Image (cartoon, rainbow, N blue to C red; front, side, top):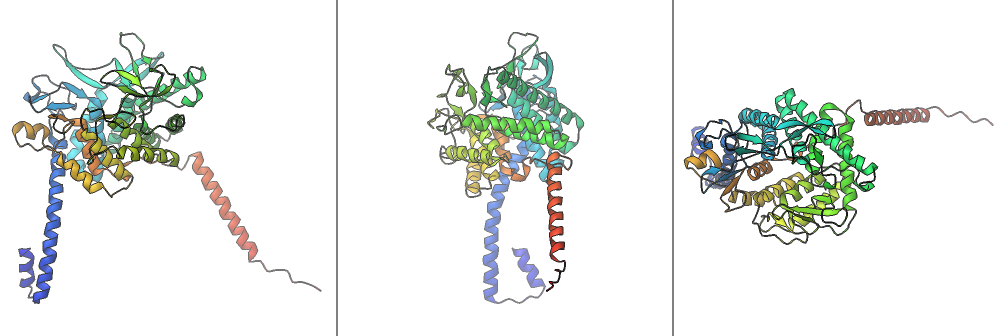
Length: 492
């Protein structure tokens, strides 16, 4: 402000006292606004610093902070325990996929130079987390959910279970990495994973055609494939139909179609969403998203949740907040209005669960909290979905609530690992990469980042549209031409 006043005086500008007062008031207002912005920028800068430098993402496997375990390059640790200053020995592939999606979006809004090295490094780790296995006498590409550390062995990917959600999520992450880097290896591996998902859908379709599943389950996808006894072939949870794949189904298959222009991706995507609509038409009393259609509770195929703590299934078991938001988000980003309506219904119900913009980790189907504690990830997901809905009424207040939970620690370990990050649950002393990544993504996300179905010029739908438009235009020209012709004179 002083520099501006000196500049004005040096130019010989004469001002009245009233004008000076007005300028001082305006400048004071600007300073106040600038201070508020600086505070917000500081929080975001700390978060970005975590993205670029935190050792929860492995840049140097030989770093002493990893206790000589030599984790895989580009791996992302799920948790860090602040109290004992150690990483929980669990490299989390879903967190790595979310990291690649976050850094891909950061690259698109001007941070490519900052994030490109780590984006490639973590994308390469995703490639290393894939494998080929035999399913129904066919070789398919799958992705390990986690890497665990085993004494005298080292870090190994878990191969007993492969989840459909991970298959689609990693495919989407690799496609987004391909869009930034143009590295064909990411695209080709993503294509293999998409083909696996489509094959799984065809296997479910075979169950429908064979009478093992009802017609309304057509288009569904299974929860996972498994092999617990090292058999040569994997099995599929045909009767655990996953309802929570909407966000990754939309993202992965829409990008797949946009890149390769193959209708099979659109067909698979749309058939899954048709299954979702039919499922929720089975009952009018559903308030919150369920994770599954399953018969494990012994009541035939019906809505069910899986309680991962008690290992119980059923319609009265609790749902997790993150899975509910994943599903609601996928419905809201869909281009079908009926699906958007269902998504808004779930969003409205979920929003009533928050207290001060914080959500419990899990709730029973009647809305009662289980009591596991608040889940930071829920607040980030809530902010993201409101921004995608272009609902700005609560945006600033939720952002403030998020920043109130951000960790700040300038000690050596803090600055290297978790400064600018978030805990799994406030006060838990357990820093979680997944919650941190989802939360940071919510701060930058916008509707323009969501894949939209591209109508290619050679597609049948486009050609039909063009043909009809041309016919309409020709008809208009003919009509106008005829209207301007001279009328024949009448004769007596």
